[in-house]
Amino acid sequence: MIKVKICGITNLEDALFSSEAGADALGFIFSKKSPRFISPKDAKKIIFSLDPYIVKVGVFLNQSKEEVLEIADFLSLDVLQFHGDETQEYCSFFRKKFRVIKVFFPNNRPFEEKISKYKVDAYMFDIKYEDKTNIKTLPKDVLKELSNLIKKGYRVILSGGINLKNVLSFCKLKPYALDVASGVEKFVGKKDKELVSLFIKSVKNEGSR
Image 1 (spheres, helix red, strand yellow):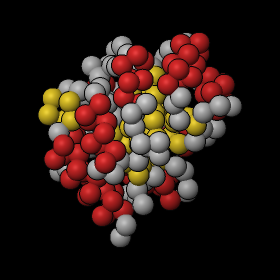
Image 2 (cartoon, rainbow, N blue to C red):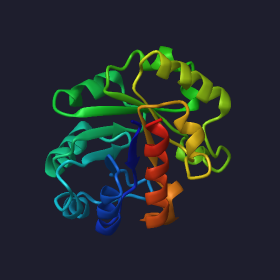
Image 3 (cartoon, helix red, strand yellow):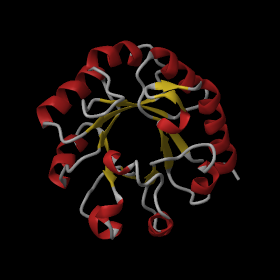
């Protein structure tokens, strides 16, 4: 079964509905460079109201170990997702206490050579925020390479421009999980309940085949 992470959660209503709709994980972005940034204080109000079985993911971008550790402990996060230039040594530091996801981008190809240096729990593949005006989704040649990684047993998470129109094509690759933010939003930072519900149903129905 393909897992679904609803990322960029900024309010309690979206968090509760996404959980009730069947999301496996919720993502909270703690990088101030993101338009979906949420403060640890605001995130705590949401996280401590959630179903205890929902996975709480903190998203970070080139932040100090001290800052990440302080936020992760304050919020009792389950998973840390590193979206920048973090090294394997940096990721290993956190794996002693948390599950870790490292994000990679098309310019990191060939992927296997790059990701094999990282001993983390899952590998996410996304498009850099500054490139999203020109590249809407991961290109076909990139997806072909990722398909081979999936077949080799790598725990691959796909992200970047996924929405209801293209989600089934991503599901066919049988990744470990799909990560969505803008594809289920009314506007930046506010989820659309119908889109969230339909997205999760589409993934779960296709992933169970």
